[in-house]
Length: 319
Length: 260
Image (tube, rainbow over all chains, first blue to last red; front, top):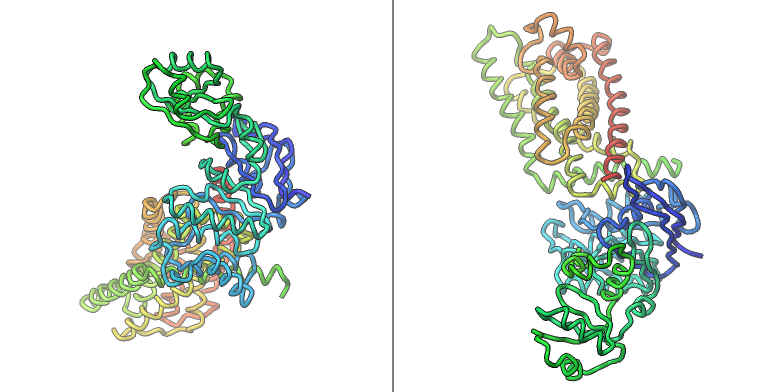
């Protein structure tokens, strides 16, 4: 039994089709990462799941029931923005949101105490939200989505605009939720985050899932295990040489990415490029970011735009 | 109490409690909402005291001050501010996803602002009493008029707040543009006897006119329920319409928010 199921969902705003036969399934107790560039339809899909928008066609189910009315109570949503009452203390925010779901008295106290403990909020019990740092506000933002003990948690870019340290702390929180068996639907632009947290990932493109699979399955889309990133002003010459020695070529972020079919040492790579003018070369293991670019590249109707304009690729990733 | 009614009551109390806690913590708005009517009362008391020939009296002044200077800003302006803040803080989206009933949200605001209104009434009438003013009519009739006034103001606030105020900077615009002319038309700052006949006819459709007239009549000459029936019926009807318009405006705001 799946927790979330989109089947052939279409949604247009005016002439623009935002979701185009979107189909995806989130299984129980998994963390599903929904990735894709801005405007690919992620937010619209989430809004439909939350019953904030109606689809033009297709069906959306939560827990095998249509996603509307009472069913959405099993849903906890942590929006991208800090959606909290800034003058209230963390527990007061949690209590208010609990009240909206009819949770009060001992039940509410027990639930709030558990969340305060889980998210380490006790030292800030008498601190208004406005006085907390971004990372701590994010924690309360997630806790507020959990106060009614939902079965499904939607995290919409939960670590945007926080520093690295806070992001890693939030990852630990999400890992803990994952361990507790909660089903999580996560959207993020941080591909390392998706790689760290998600059991499966769907990459959206133009309103539908372009590729879907486990991290290992997506990494297998890149025809290499190691990538040599070459920084040079003579990209065409490097690309020609790489092709001659049997390496795949991509252009990421102003650099030539040489896809090595079998692992080579840095010395061997430099030796293969001998005689070419290069500024720097480094080896990287294939990551979800490369797989993501591979999917985006593959699905682009005008692939040359990407290869000739590496900045565009970077923008897609960073967007 | 059935499950749905209990949830409705909890949501209403939850919204009211949250707004009051926020106000207590901010304090500044509360202080201004107390200082402004107090200063207005002192000024008008001084003016009436030094000009005994002026129409109006110190007994009816607190009613006008309470309706026009206290409740107008706390309940009408306060409602607009609450809605705008909800939108700006993005908490509206959380409310949207929750099972919060629109009527519970409306009544929660009414309840919170009624509490503030009663505190304002206590301040205004305590000060007025110290200045030598008298309240001749029924205390409970006064409370009913204040409660209906809060309801009507919150309804107007919902209408203005959802239609004309998107950001914090927009709050004063609709309150000043629509609210202040309604205050003037209602004879808040001077007796309605000074209004030309045509304006007086228009004023009859202004809810603030009925708030002023009824509370002034109760306070100044001890008017009773039957004498004020027209005003009270108008205010009750307006409150019912305000509730309906408020809920409709809230729903409309949610639709707009969903699309954003």
